[in-house]
Length: 616
Image (cartoon, rainbow, N blue to C red; front, side, top):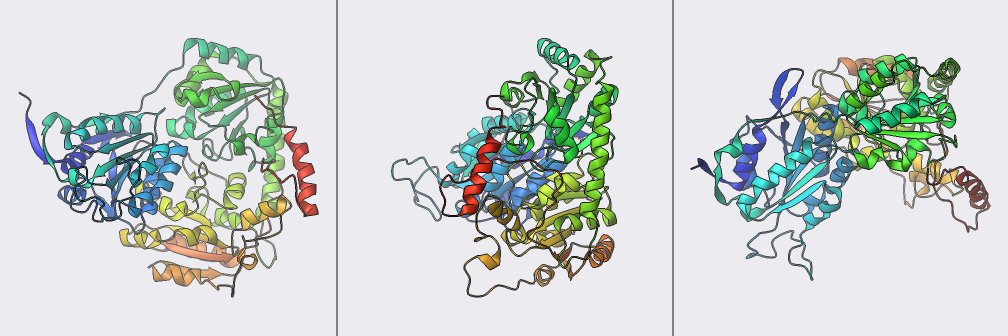
């Protein structure tokens, strides 16, 4: 008869998590770096007590905001290239639904995240309990059903033994390269405290290693045939290159063939920025070099990318009518997008076999030479954009230039939303893989500081630099206090353009009046004078405001030596962005408007949509 141990469901859950391991650089380490927890009546007595028992084996971290702690868990997993992860638990109600946005961000970015929100009573005797959402027509619904469309796997634990199959399925999803994404296990609060005789085997140590799927021979042969016929091949490197640890395999392929590479937001840093074949960012926020090559490419090898509209210029960028797309992706859903020749495989394995099978192939020298010429031209344009000037208000690009000059490419640079993703994607010169950290799949305002906290937990010996605007800062800044509390130093560069400058530029670019984005254009009785430095200092950070690029560089040099989180604030111009590079983006302009500016932009919009390759 199998041996059992009697535990509450919550105790069994946490003990199981603590026994999950992974191997990194030859060492066995816990798969879960810990659990973020904000306790309430729906989880404090159940999972809270269970976490206390394992506080040394499975660390618990307290945050100040539920969405932020889940963002920190996302940042941790992404910094580990999905090899390690974290869980987050909240009470029933608003604590739980606060995590839905983070769950969606993990879902879009294909990142592992285990969410453990409290839920209603399974026995329903005290219904409705505090914070319970009632559905008039369905007694099985709770607020946690909001997680269903943004979770890769969702389960509600209404009996203590259900945690056994639920965790088995959860672990499969969290560690599978193709299925990877967030898992939500809604924990009925009475069931958390109920006991069951669990088999001891449920708590046996297990080491998880990533599955390395090799390509199908027929798919590989078709891809190689298309590559050998190509005169103007181009690689688009997505986040899957980094998650797979495929940077070396990518470098070997392109160096042997002379094929230029461009990078998505998720794939940036797949190759060092100074690699001669790296054209840099592609698409709407792309460099002139990458987009020039993309416009002519007759074969696009899309590796580990979702090919979203920012990458493809809303499918108007890749204009060669005879082009072939080869989708190399561990997920078949992504590999076959836009009638691509699918190669369903791990990026590292697929690139290695592609290189071996296509050995001897070389891109025409004229194509490789063109890429180098385009890169040189871009480098000059980028240097002009990032150089300091005597402007009263510096541009985002000039601030980026200052950060790069002082802190270099060795830091891990993190951003998420607003105007900075466009500027950083083009202009930041990333070094080693993973040193550029963008949450631009979901572009979540407020991710930046919390996500950086998770990155710092994953890379405690590395400098982590956050760049964000005042809009994102105002949405979610509470984890500055958490970073100070945990002794995890961040360097935060806050660009204050007094509103939502990026969307204001888009609004004006589509013919609209400047309206409701900048603070001065929003309804107000008086304009707030927000002292961001004082606010950050009140949460325990070292903080200062600077008034020029020169002062910023001096402040950054001080920040590098500081022993705790430092916030440097600088006012920037809300209307200026880098003119070089970039590509059209499909943002629909109204057919009817009283504004002549909108009518003019509609004509330009209609002309631009004719360049889209429908069905390609």
